[in-house]
Every structure is written in C-alpha cells, then in structure tokens.
Image 1 (cartoon, rainbow, N blue to C red):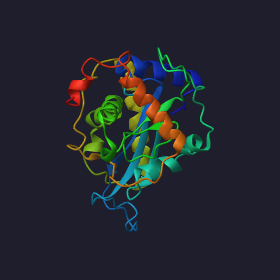
Image 2 (image 1 turned 120 degrees about the horizontal axis):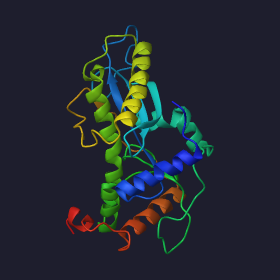
Image 3 (image 1 turned 30 degrees about the vertical axis):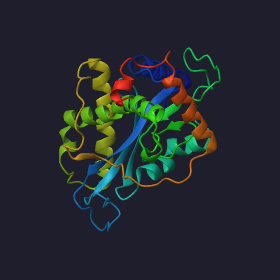
Amino acid sequence: MAEPTTNDWLDISKGFYEKTNFPNTVGVVDGKHIRLECPNNSGSLYYNYKNFFSLILMAICDSNYCFRIIDVGSYGKESDCNVFKTSTFGKKLYSGSVNFPPDQCLPDDDNGVPQPFILVADEAFALHKHLLRPFPDRTLNNNKRIFNYRLSRARQYIKCSFGILSKKWRVFQTSMLVDPNVAVKITKACCVLHNFVRRRDGRDGEGIFEDTQSNLMESITERRGVGNSQTNAKYIREYFATYVNDPKHALNWQNKIIGE
C-alpha cells in the first residue's frame, strides 16, 4: 500500500472538509484487535487487556473509507498509542519527516494563522501538532464539548471503515486459526481488497456504520493516561476549537447536540 504523496494528502483533506466540515484533516487513525487462537509458545505477548489473544491492525483512513496507511502485526498487549508511535509512519510523524503539506490557513479564517495538517484520533492517542484528540472530560466547557463533537464526526470514518472491512471479509468475524505471520498477511491482503472494492463500487455502502463491538474485530482503545502533551499541540487544538465555535464555521445543530 503506497504512502500518499503530498498532493494526495491535500485531496484527502478536501474530502474530509466537504463531508465533515473539519479542516486540514488528512486522515483518521485508530487500531483494531484481530482475534487469534492462542499462538504457540507466545506466552502473554498476544494476550490483550480485553482478555483474548490478538494482533493489532493500526490504520489511517480517508473520507471514502479507504485505508491509506496500515501497520499490522503488533502484539495484542500493546497500547494503541505505543503501536502508532513505533510504526513506520508514526516514526516519520513524530520525527517531523512526514510529507504532509505545509501549514495553511483554515478555510475562511479571519485570524489567518497557518495551521498544520492533522490526523484525527481518540483520547487513547497522545496529542501532537499533527494529531488532534478530544479534550478530556474533566476540562470540558461548552466550547470544548462542541470541538469534541466536531472531531467525533470525523472519527466516525475509521469506525465505519473497520466495520465495512469486517462485514465484507468474514475472516474477521471469528478467531483466526493460523500462525500470527499468516494472520498478518491475511489482514494486509483484506485491507488491499477492501480499498479495491471501495474504489470500484464508489459510494455504495457508505451507510454502513457498524457497531464494532458486535463483531470480533474490536477497538484497541484503552482508557489510560498518555503523559503531558506538548504546549504547541495544545495551542493548535485550542485554535481549532475557536475556529469550530466561530458562528461563521459552526454547524446549525451543534449547540443542540451538546445540550446547550
């Protein structure tokens, strides 16, 4: 699976803005447990906090539910934050060598301060200048709740992508009775086939928002602390929060959603 070019990232960002009204978004990242029967001589390496054996599929999707980056094979016991940081793409992101487009102003932004292109993630990931996660519950005011809601609209795309994958390729609906190395190859092949089918069929099936807890391809999110976030990353998140709360960029229903 070829890594997107800088122009590809720009196209992905346009797609997310058109569909979610969330700017400068080049993908949504999350991970899933791929269930295994107990691998031979593996001890507790593949045994996860949900009390079953698994390896991890870490993926970044676009707004068409296609996977653009995947990393497959980390032990089930690993946390999603650590899996992403130690993946090939994660290392590029955190070392500053990822080929995202240069910072640019958010659409119709009167303040005009260029902002980085970002990945959207959930609270299990560490905040970074190129990765936005929700504000923690303990700090929430209405503006932060609205930001979290707007972020969650984009986050649904990775949940739906995993749901479509599991629905189409039923190998994910049971524990794999194969060696972990074979399970990695099966998972990679299914992700490539998933992209082929998505591009062939176009928009067909976009209404499938699976309850990912109802099948055996489960989220790897574990509610745990991820340490102190960088000050610059916090500023970027605050900037995006101010932007989505500006009446010019607000959704008509966002205040009702948070109960304001």
